Length: 478
Image (cartoon, rainbow, N blue to C red; front, side, top):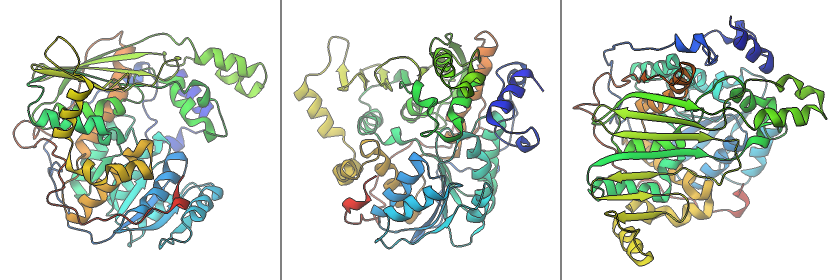
């Protein structure tokens, strides 16, 4: 076992035996990660792209992980009709009690599971649950998703859905075998400007898409060391020994849909480069001077502040992704779309659109485009979503749309191939960085169906709309 891997286990308090088959295998950014390239050729067992599972009159849900994301999600879903929260699970009893207190007075009376680290399996094994909603630390995402699908449950899982290429394949193969959905909870695919530009692309506004850019630039450096906010320091530990783009999907998800990746085009290869770390080790030294328990992070090989990953598709289009969570920067996902006719950029706000190369549209011109291309789903529930909240309403948009698809027996907007592809940037970028930014091939998780079979994402509610919304209860705000 490499010295880096031993150090990671020491930091997290995990054991090598406990990691067997888990997402932490191949975690070192050294030789082990380089050797973990999976270029297998595989025959698709069953195509989950466009798959419509049988309708569910009521979607019965079990929640795994009740941290900031999970607790908010379990409370937020009670605003949607046609769902029943059957179970909530966290190994901290105070978190399950918090959710129970928040939803008291609603029709939902979930069973709380908090007896230990394995209690989540009991939730997956119940026969009265249709959907498992996973909001745990990253290294648990794939093991939980695979276990849930093998027990007959559809799965939605927080980002990223997998940590290694092997885990990406596990998600794909399990979903195809069980015919259960595995959706990555990429809420930025439901951001209002991102949905606008998706429809604009579908209607030919941009012409042929040439290049896109996405990012996750969000200064959360000090919060990584906050043990109250981040129990177990799991996210700090994730940043301690893997040097690459650890959190690619917020920037990538929306532009991947716009570029029809997995649905007419696919990623060919990527090149990734990271700066040095100029921040995290300094914070570790500062904290260690006051609290010796932080000494183990001093002189630790943290990931660099900025990672830049460039991707080329089979059709010769390009993508640029950035990841920086430790520099004093204004938040940005970039969301740049460059086509043969027009372009758009989401950040810095306000978002902008240009036709040709001369100037951005005026405010009135932008409004006219917005009025023309805003999707019906936004017109239907956009304002209510903003009121209910969750990252400005986009979390509620995502949840509502997912429930409506399951209740109507419609394909989900984001399938398991998207979950695997978008998450694969984590290990692939680390491999490229470790190999002095050499090119790394991106696997085809669709088994070839991307080329002629899979259809572009169309977020339409014309054939759905069984799902209503419960009158908002102000006591449910989180």
